[in-house]
Amino acid sequence: QVQLVESGGGLVQPGGSLRLSCAASGSIFGINRMGWYRQAPGKQRELVAAITSGGSTNYADSVKGRFTISRDNAKNTVYLQMNSLKPEDTAAYYCNADVLLGLRSYDYWGQGTQVTVSS
Image (cartoon, rainbow, N blue to C red):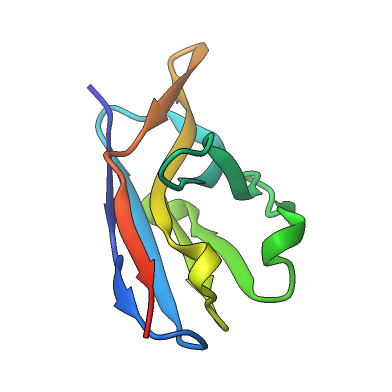
């Protein structure tokens, strides 16, 4: 059984910052790609940022230069530092991980954490 537990969401004013964390636990052999997705009301879930086990990253164009994804492989944890937040960043943010269990990998999701950017 693998669990992804997110934390760090909340209410912040435009221009503010938040840091999301997502810790994976369970009988994990390793984790390949980890990422953050978000879903606003009435919209499809979209990729925000992703990072490979080797540290390669990619970002949605809308967050480039404002958000930074990082990970601590020893702790099976991924972070999303969000700066210069805008109202359009308001969404539920979900952690995703491609987890190695033995010889196979499986896709897992966290429960989501709400980020609200409003004055």
